[in-house]
Length: 123
Image (cartoon, rainbow, N blue to C red; front, side, top):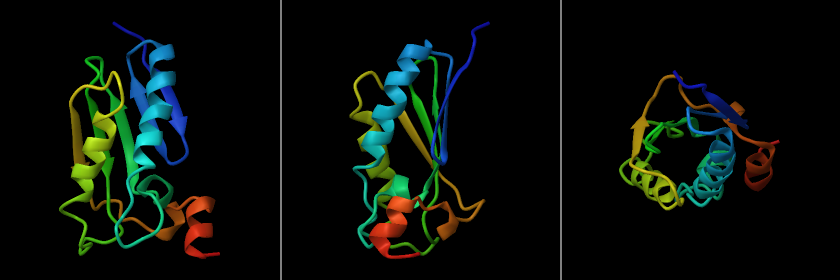
């Protein structure tokens, strides 16, 4: 049985049975990759918007992502999960990336970071 290391970053939880040093490296690199993905209609990245609910780094370095969109009718619904998969897959040391799009719990503006609120002028 292995110990599970946990790294928490903002609205996202990252769990892995990899060595803590490896999750400490991968966690921030995955977050940095997620911050490169923008909803084409919103000038804020998906991470700061709070669209990423969970990132799970597995023992084999595969990564499972649970995410949502601002609305089920989002025009980017077909492309954003693929963009997330590609961004995370670009992180050195990451294996297969699986993105699961969910609608429960529904996204709300409460999930946005202060950075996103500033960019979108939503104070």
